[in-house]
Length: 140
Ligand SMILES: CC(C)(COP(=O)(O)OP(=O)(O)OC[C@H]1O[C@@H](n2cnc3c(N)ncnc32)[C@H](O)[C@@H]1OP(=O)(O)O)[C@@H](O)C(=O)NCCC(=O)NCCS
Image 1 (spheres, protein in one colour):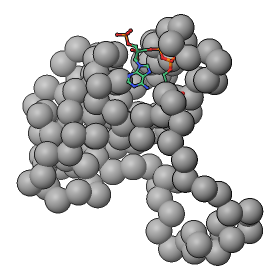
Image 2 (cartoon, protein in one colour):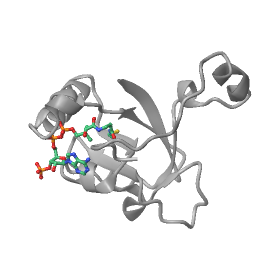
Image 3 (cartoon, helix red, strand yellow):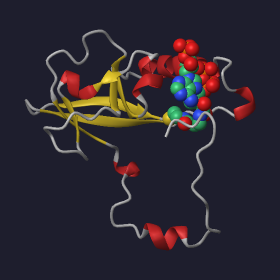
């Protein structure tokens, strides 16, 4: 799923970009190149919809293979972390060459991503308890 997002640039501009994810491939279909194809296809669609750049919180080794770089190296800060901290899991990629030239600032997730003010524990209590497990192929 892709969603519109914004960088609040230090010079006052609001730079529209997109965020997306997560990508999941069924375990019996992993390591056959599906996620790379899904990512490539969906990034082309996002570009067709006008996205000049993408941001995602994710695994740098995995997304790095598709051209994502750590956003702090480009001066783009993730709103949920202290500004002076390098955030290795916050990644960015230009879909249009030069789209982020001269842009530094702060990225915030879209409103729909934010659970602030929601009683998450009460919501979770409606479902049977789950055990946290780590499965093969799971990045985080
Ligand atoms: C991560 C995941 C989407 C990869 O899907 P996949 O179809 O098996 O991946 P691909 O076969 O297209 O591989 C694409 C590249 O990612 C790498 N890769 C695949 N799984 C990986 C893993 N678990 N950790 C690190 N790199 C991985 C591959 O080596 C490949 O790189 P290469 O082409 O240089 O060899 C899949 O394992 C999955 O659904 N995991 C659980 C959900 C998850 O953690 N998603 C995180 C993304 S938000």
